[in-house]
Length: 537
Image 1 (cartoon, rainbow, N blue to C red):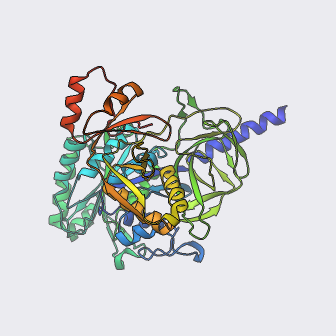
Image 2: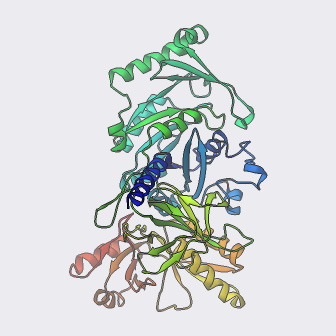
Image 3: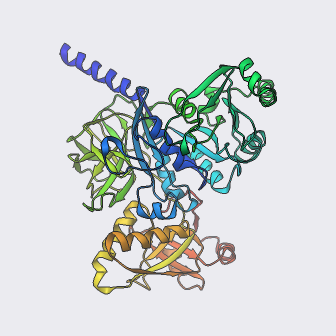
């Protein structure tokens, strides 16, 4: 008995020690702000790749990059989230790269549910853009602390103090600079590290393909080299001191302030500071609350939740992977876990650690880690998995669709592939599928943005061999409803009643005027708004 107790204490300590080494975070930004470049440079600094830009993989493996999907490489944007795990300075980083385009904000929301912190990347020339606001709202809804990086300072741009004011005004987040640039955008000489009162400059390498040398010098030495520029930067830092703009960990974790860094991901400058901030400031995994608000200790038996499902990451095997965030305990490959939603056991024989589309077999995982369960056909986004002690984590929400279209197979001989592909992509959350009883053979699709349709068509054709036609509709507004109201709505013009696969009903309206008129004329009818991050069951 004493040996069992000793072993239990040892296991608890081991889990807690391993959790303390984890940092699980996302990078969020508006398209073209440099998110993918920064992701690659993190991998470069962490030793996960040996050369940035071309991104040569570890140990001579095939190319491994965050934008692994062919469509992403063709378009030059991220349309799917990926997981990249690497070690740096004895810490394990789980970096979740997210889509930058607003049309994929739902995928970003789900990914952020698996994170403990986020880095918000802003283009120094553009500042806070519409998608930046959307992503910040997602972070705020998830209570995720944010580190800010003003990127592309090696190019012409706006005054960084002006950008700080914009962040505070538009996002209600108080920036607290930890590094501050010397020189104007486009003439980037280095940064002042405020805490140590030192000046740091850097060696420029060809497109930042290799980690360059950084030089640290005293402020007096720096003044002898860049008198005018240093004095201006020091005046600005003195202003920050007067305004008490210093990092405060409590307000950072509360989502009220954001440590701010300035640099250039392309030239690697500022990347080391950011990695250091993730290590020192970003919270380590902490106990998660279940659906009833009860906290599940990190040392409790294994538990986790599925936040993403992705098909055909390996075209040679046509498999699909469920991404699971480990919330408590130790995950061990081969263990049998229970799916809370179905009550069925699930064997974890094929478990992987992810690096973009590359994967390696993983034997163990700890709180904060992301495990890829291969060919997990019975799992759905939002499912909770556990061992020994039952638990159910809160359901992941879906965004309200804003545009709708019918989809039709262009080749009747490929109907089976069409149905299989549409079902799989719906499971992944690429699209929302509704059923219109008036057109039973043509599913009705709901999306947040047009690009979701583009991705759907591309993947159906290239991954499932199914050519399709998208037929746009004029519907733009959606409300949840119930059978009695649905019957009355179905007799009206400009309204369509559709059904989820679960059987839940929704009503679609062509314009806001039609919706408001019906709500005013029939206040007793059940028409429940689905706000941007509301649930569409």
